[in-house]
Length: 256
Image 1: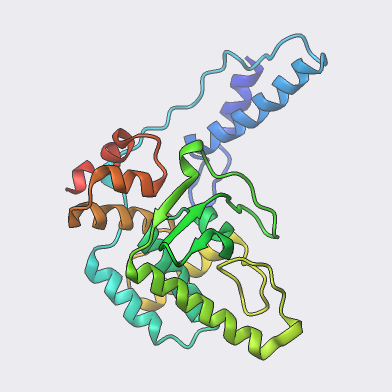
Image 2: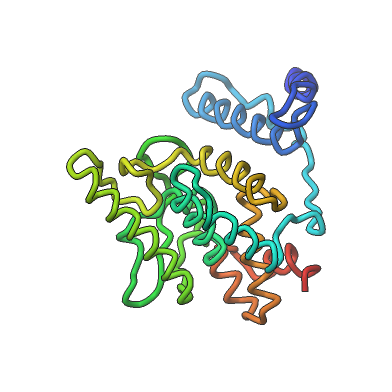
């Protein structure tokens, strides 16, 4: 009962952009405390996990509320940002373009390194994810997330643009630039904090005059445009790193 009371108190706390924490946030908090208590049981600190019977808050996904761009909005964003004079505009546009062309998750984009890119065979391999500042990477979200994504000619061009930007920064800064090996880096060679990717995208959407769909919305845009274009469901599902085609269909069937 203490656990239920704790969740009730937690529910009234303010979220990032809402008056109270969402059920998804509550589930994350409960999962963390459960993990701690399971460790305590394993270490013989307590006899049993007292939260084992606390019901997890339900999260109901409504696929019709998925936010994504259409082709015109994609073209408008690219056109406006290609003329932007904001600092590192080319890098941030490259991040958006690569996500639109591959469906990478934000952490997968932030953790992508050049050795994962195979220009000869026109593909990238997702092996890691980077969720926080610094150079530390972790395993991708799931087993299905370890995947190889084929690259379209446009995707190859976007990667080449990012490499050209890095070559220019290296020529200017020389030994003053770190060589971290990441695909998405700032002029000093250091990869940006993943949260910075989200924040910059929000500002760029406002500057370009297009709807802000969240950075994850770019992944939804990749999927919907690919399916509408007629690319096979199993191909899109594999590119997204879904464990089954049913997951992909449940999210995007209403778009077709």
